[in-house]
Length: 421
Image (cartoon, rainbow, N blue to C red; front, top):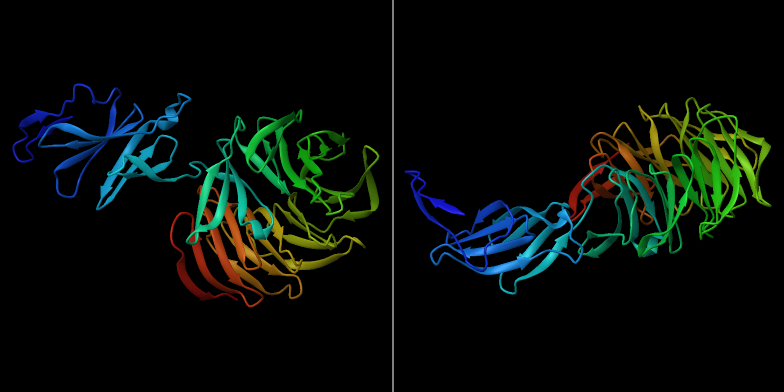
């Protein structure tokens, strides 16, 4: 570290500590507010506070882990008032306590597009996300003064993009472009890894833990331990989405031929139910969701249209949900089965009313470059994730369509009272 005269450019001196110097490259330097100390972050996974006058190290923060990994390299820092922050290569932001020499708080999250979302019981206030780089996180919403605290799931994750996630009780399922499905508990990812043989596109789980997976070639069903229950091979179309009813007896498969078909899951087989073919969509099926009561199916397509079908009769009961202008990427029902939230490539999130199909809550430009996942975190709170690598929680008043506030993860809620038609 060299110090120079700011006016003349003359080198004043070099900060050197015989036994406390950095052993790797120094990526960032920040002055204290009174200019008496320096904060340095290094590739050796340490952060140091230097006394400029004494030319010595007064505090060292060791942020390395037992497993040697480049992720702990410290590549940026900031000294803002009483706050000392250091940024790791992994994207984690560490708040440093200069008095104790310990990390006071770590802010974690995704650094790449978030491509999957699943939410447990609303009372748990926990949801799970997966991203383009194969990382999975658990978010504990509301734990810290209306902030959401993220924790990376433990264990070996996916080798690349996570395409879909589902949850059933304490079981979390994830599918990735590495052609595997992982069966885990809420505390650990990758407890059981099952090869799918082809790329999985979509997953859905029943409350009992039966998992169905739509791959580019077939549809597979598993129990919660990863044991395969059935396979639908050569269906005659390319599966693009899948959903399972709460009783785990009926599987709905969406295809690239604009149709959704129903199959009975029993006796180790998926058997077509020919009287329940749902064919009102205008484009390839891109998102499916069965209501918690098992009575209705919401089907979104590549044209931005959403149709709701009665699963008892196969009749279409809602045709008015047509206001997305691009592919529908995600659908989720509220717990009472009266509302559906949708997220689209068009960057918008809509909340639809089954009893009054002509009304909707609009959250426009929710995520730059597209919304990839949506879900319900309670009766009035909607979670969305997107290409912008952010998680957002939106509070709405239903059925009136009043958007109250938006939470950006890790920050205080931002008030935005607004009436939406």
